[in-house]
Length: 144
Image 1 (cartoon, one colour):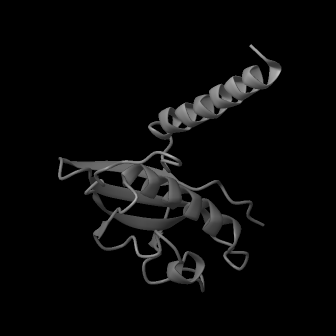
Image 2 (cartoon, rainbow, N blue to C red):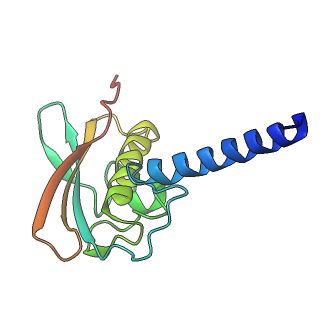
Image 3 (cartoon, rainbow, N blue to C red):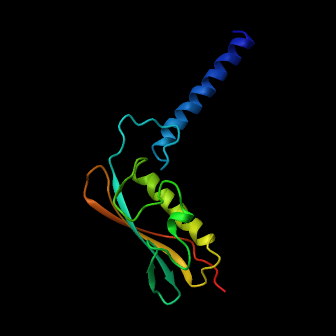
């Protein structure tokens, strides 16, 4: 076998191996990158999000908190989590984006000097299954 034939076979093996890895990895990735799913998930969710202060008091952020509005800070995918909505990318991806949104809001609200962390109590149904609950919490904020 010639060097060119060996190089071509090695190249094909590497490309096929990389594709196979991407497809297998997609089943464990919440965002399903490179993983085609022929049937979409039919999950729905809603969340109650609270700003929690040092004393443990919880302020609902649905109508704004400390001069900020959730919808003004978070504009994509999880901008309206307060009413029951479809999770078009699947519930795992939605929870992933909601966690990232909580962390983003916690880090980008400098005028808020009371909130220690944000907490989301999420209720969801995956593929019309039983109602499930999960609590997500942002990173703790450094307060003055």
